[in-house]
Length: 249
Image (cartoon, rainbow, N blue to C red; front, side, top):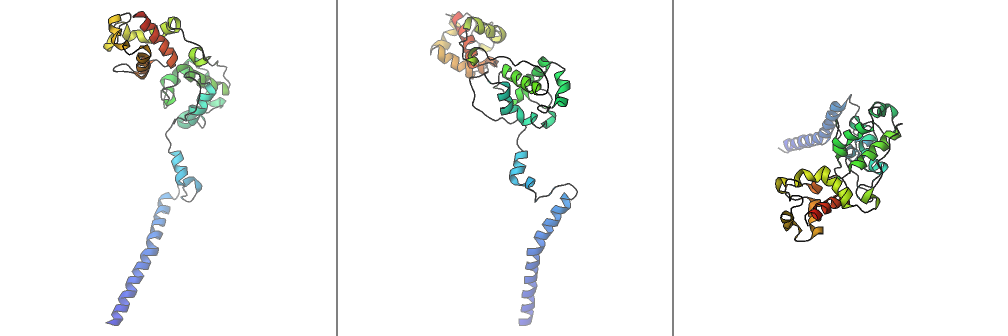
């Protein structure tokens, strides 16, 4: 019986040893089988967890940077904080920065066509590159900056109004914004919007003060989106709000 026990023990020990050596070897060979011919080497630095994670970052991810008031970012600032994620390498078909061959045909379509595509979205590029808080002029500046790096002669829109540190006049800029954006709802009181010039409609909105009413409108309330869908600065929107409110007094 003792001899049988010894043989049995040796057999079990052999099986354990085979498992310890054989399983890792089997896994290694299996990995080699599925990666052979693909150019993948799991031991290379490009296959580290950090490297793979970097390649899996979302397309068009936004790098937040400090800047001036809304609407004041230069084309260079917008490019370096946002556009570079795709245009820096030509990701997803984006024309590469400073690549005249990539940009040539696009530049020939004209500045307006290019910034219209950039603002509204085009092919794989979402509207405003996915940064909805950018003003239209900031997007235009970024398009001009990128186009000019490849030989275009586009002119970046100037920084004006509140974005440049100047006061915004409700009677001029405020009226302009009202006529182009706000009147769509406030003229007829659409979707519950207080009607332009209607003191009774505006009274409950102004019971906590004009500044409070404007702050609420900037954030959006009920059916009204933030700033009524206006893409410019808060100060410009406030001028439009003052224009509307002044008409109801």
